Length: 271
Image 1 (cartoon, helix red, strand yellow):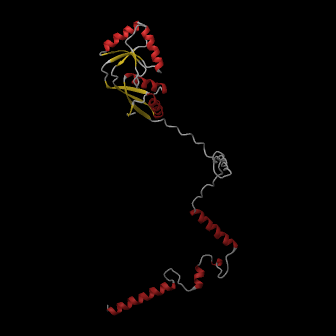
Image 2 (cartoon, rainbow, N blue to C red):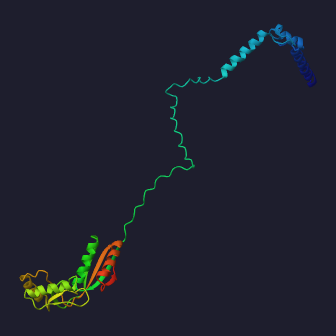
Image 3 (tube, rainbow, N blue to C red):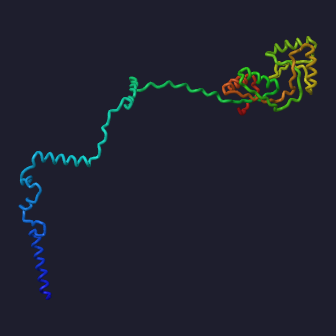
């Protein structure tokens, strides 16, 4: 078969298929415009071009829309219930009103406690005296001023001899009267000390080179009833008396010892 005839036959078949499809010969109605589309539409009687939907149609549409919305809306939270009495917060008690300020506008100041008074500091004073009698006098005078006084005696120069005597009297008249009484008891080796110093108006009953001899003399006098005799060093010696007490007590001691022992040398010492 010639090629041109074959091409003609294929072109003819294509034209027939196109015509059959357009005319509906192959099972599908042809599209002939708006009238055929309206004819093929389901319930064409319900379509009214240019007219609004009826109330029944609007209700049907609204019910359908609400059903679709209910299908997609999540379940709502439960409504909050009113709190019970036990869940209510406990009311706080009302605070008392602030105390009114005084007329001057300042709060009254608290009474200040008196400050504790510090005790006086400790103090010390030392006196260098000649003879044990003067050292003993200084110690006794300090003790009469205060019981808080502490005293320490130190020997600076030892005595070289010992004297037996009657202690000093307040006046020369009293010393002379006592000397007459001793002579009346048979004691002749005696004399009243006239020198200035702590031994003035004492009665000397003997000077010895050793303490043992002085003690024998004292024993003899005691047997005669002379009970006020005593032994002191003949060369008096030098003694240092240290007195320790609060500063106010030391001030009083210094004043009185200055009058009682004018020959005493005042020295400083550590409290």
